[in-house]
Image 1 (cartoon, one colour):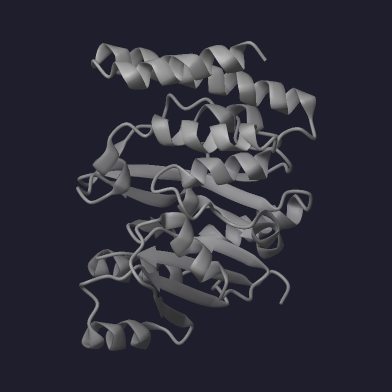
Image 2 (cartoon, rainbow, N blue to C red):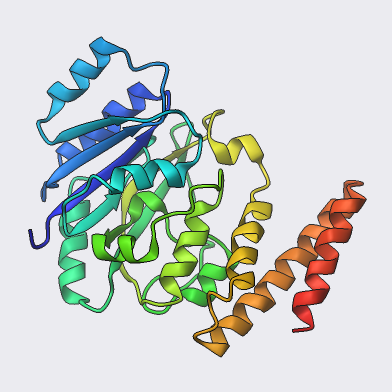
Length: 282
C-alpha cells in the first residue's frame, strides 16, 4: 500500500521500556500499517506479558528469536516480516513524538528522490536533556562526507523505503556495535536523504546494559565497518567517494593507534598505525 509504514522494534530484557515505546507508536497521528516486535530471546517476557503485549494493539506482530546480541540481525528479522512501503525503526528504549510519522511522510512526498527521511532527536540521560548545540554536520541531501566521520542518523529517527532496505541487504548481522554507522554509509554513498528539522524522538541513554555503555569506546567498531567496505571496494563506483572513505579510514586508524599506544596496547597500536600508513599512501 502506498505510504504505508511498517515499524520494527527490537527488544531484549526491557519489557517496561518496550511498552512505553509501543504506546508512542500506537499514538501516532499517522498510524503504521503494522508493528513488528522482535524479541532477541528476552528473559523478562513470559506468557502473561506476551498476552498483555498482543492485547495492546491488533497491529502488533511478535517474533521471538534465539538470542544473538546483534542489533542488525534482530532488525533484519523484523524487516523480513514487513509489508509496508516504508520501514521505520524504533529502538525499544526510545520514544516517538505523536506527529513523527506524519511529518516524515509529508517530507518524503516533498522529496521523492530521497528514499530515507530522518529527524532531529532529543538525547535524555536520567531524565535530563543533553544539549546537541555543537552538532554541525550536514543532515539533508548528499551527506556521505559527514556520515563518514560519525554516525549522523539515529536509527529511531529513520524511515526508509522497504525496497531500499532490501536492495542493500539490511544491516550487517555480525556487528555488535556501529552496525548503524556502516549501514548509513552504504545508503548515503548512493542516495540523498531528507530531513525533518524537529526533535521527534526522545533517545533515552544511560542504561548499563546498552551496548554503547558496555563498550565505551565504539570507534574501533566504526573502523571495522568502514575497513570492510573499503577493502570490498564498495565505493569504487565513484573515485571521489572512494578517496574520501580511504582518507577517513586512515585518519580514524591513526587516532585509534595513538590512543592504544597511550594505554600500553602496543600490538594493537602497531596494527592500526600500519593501516593508517597503508591507506594514507593509496
